[in-house]
Amino acid sequence: MPTWLSIFFQFYWIFLVVFLGIGGYFMFRKFLKALPQADGKSILDWQEHYINQTIHLWKDEDKKLLNELVEPVPKLFRDVAKQKIAAKIGEIALEHKATQMKQEYIIQGYILATPKRDHKWLIQTLEKKKIDLSPYQHLF
Image (cartoon, rainbow, N blue to C red; front, top):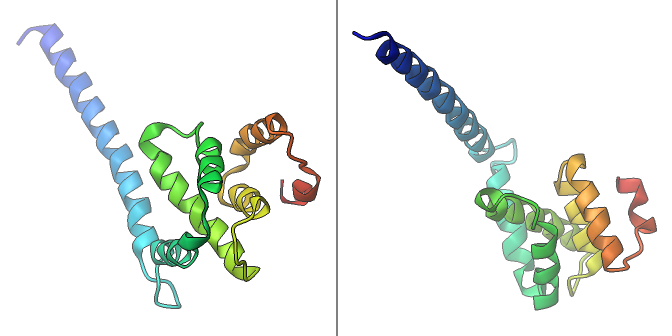
């Protein structure tokens, strides 16, 4: 067998193992979220519950703001991120016994549902929209 072909096969197997490992990692994370917790519901069940309980509160302008906030997320993961953030926003709205969705709930939910590295984008977006960040400083 030629040397170039054996080197190609070695790189192919390394590539295959690395990508299967990465895919397995993300599948395992999703599996852990689907496992029931002590209360009998999984994280995904709770997300669905909060979204279903508050879906009637969302207006078009609220959805537009959420879409703007999740814009930096890669398109492949955007729907999952939007669902996670919307669930956190719904949880906050239910805690406040809201009768309508407020911008304050959306911003709070986004801050609590996203990692700190994404907060930079949120700050930039809210400053462009001239929204005061002082009520949310304790969440950053």
